[in-house]
Image (cartoon, rainbow, N blue to C red; front, side, top):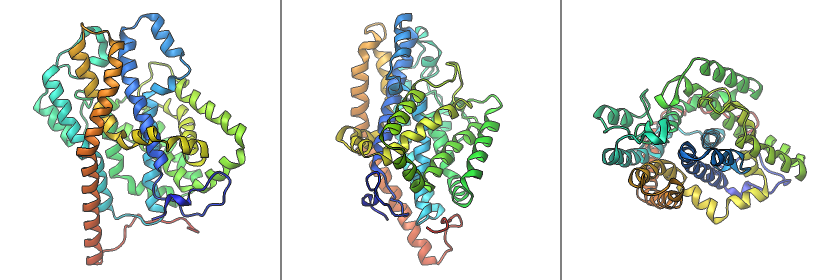
Length: 397
């Protein structure tokens, strides 16, 4: 495995071999998770705020800090990037790959699901004044069928009844299951073929009315296309770095400002549906943020500083638990405390619970995944089984 030492500063010569881990992307994922945390509070607050406050929330230049849906799209790009890297050097066998993904995604999710179901059982009931977004979650006593659907995880079912953030994990897991052939196609065919094909598939999948919050199947194709964008960045990282370095400081600053503005103020109407073609308007900005995190010295140093690095470590746990914290707080405090005053408690409790979940659930689940994958790899080696059929290396690598 390559080490981070092969990541040189902008302008230095680099080898074609790519590192298998980018801690700066963990930090970027942590900031994106924090944006989702803020987004859900802003969505809730916006529904009860005065018109002046609503206008202010839309006009704030730092609105990208709570662009929650765009943060989820960034998750998908990062996942496509990091999952592709092993296929460029030492491709894992499919059983080992799948074992790690199940332990990484599903096991911590089950713990968060148990917490969310307990919250729904304790606090269920609508609060009409908070509108339809709030009342799609914890509106009724949990049912056995709903719990079974959520445990099964990857099927089609209303996936926001316990936690409003769970919907994206359904698609993350589905795409992980079929990711090896995606990586094979990205590494086998030219980008000029792969990217238009992914875009066309995404457009065709988005044509009929479908809802990610219902676990519909067609959005899986759309979100898989975003994994493809991340995978293409990984495949062509040397060329991307060279392009980034050639731009020079001023064009890079302009591009970064444009990317942040695009993420904060995309051109889609506010009533757009999640997973609609409008997502592609934001993809160039998100891709530039990912590239900057890897290629720009200043960005890398900032992302590797203590706070972003800390958020990166707990990012998945933070994403899993923050919705449960928010809904529990609102149900307890509604009618007693104004919503804006709940923000510090919401953020603090979410981060504190995420730290516990990371230590007690997420880290052991990751260790279990690596142990299972290692045992499967040793068993395959001992049995002399053939290598992964999707193990494709680019010419010259």
